[in-house]
Figure (cartoon, rainbow, N blue to C red):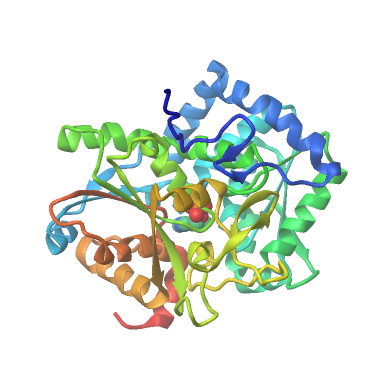
Length: 397
Ligand SMILES: *Cc1c(COP(=O)(O)O)cnc(C)c1O
């Protein structure tokens, strides 16, 4: 009898196991269908790859280094490598995806770009590539977030984007997403919607994963140089929606010898009502057009998540991660605000690298894992410049 091999990649219908799909209003169907029909052919074309690789190299600054963190390694008696996505242009991995999507938008003859943003990091990465490509850019952002994240709002404006406040509901990310979707329904022909993580209806999770997969592709060849083998024992990445994690897992996901560790934000603690640890607290449901795990009340109202790091403050996870969790392929670890802040300060003092607080969650997970004697890659998704205020308020350094 033939044993069916489980793949952790997306299937033809856009599912990861039972998660994923495209649960969208009928009015959105033409937009999403146009993408679904064309994305694989476009991104595998020679012309696209030539442009994409050239921008990743000369504009984003890739390949990013795989750095052997000697003092950190010594502290854990392991070989710990940091994948330096913090050195990407704009300070995090998000630009890998926005570069890919704007080239795709051009290939589809789109003239305008829209995006939603919470903390503003995805908005900035989108405004950046729109300036680069001379495309009209509108970013939807909750009114509350505009107030909380004003430096990123100004950054987007300097880059030439228009920031439109979402004034309904809780006036945060989910309301900005609703506004963006409404706008897209009304402007289907000339507009592309750039989603910032491995979330949303199929094909977004797969498309964003492919654009971010450059991370694991580079890890493979860089680790071969350092260690004489392409595979680490363990890869650790933080998960908000899950794009930096999906990109750093991509070339290892079907190789069971490589342990995949996903780090979620436990905020003040999973039993405090102030957490964003989706696999610990979430249940199955539909969020932003895909079936996944999300934090919701019994009658299906999305629960407002909390984390000290804005990038992990999301009530769901991408369907790829819901599947990695349910199948047991991925190991999910929760890290609190306090653990993350301490790890961020520890990394600063040991290695001279101030990480984004999102990435500090991944570093903090090292003390919860059995890593002695192992080769571990931590994906350092972003740099801490944007979080300086939070570090200063935290104070304990
Ligand atoms: C946005 C962001 C994240 C979270 O997004 P993912 O899609 O989960 O990767 C993590 N780290 C940094 C630095 C970010 O800016």
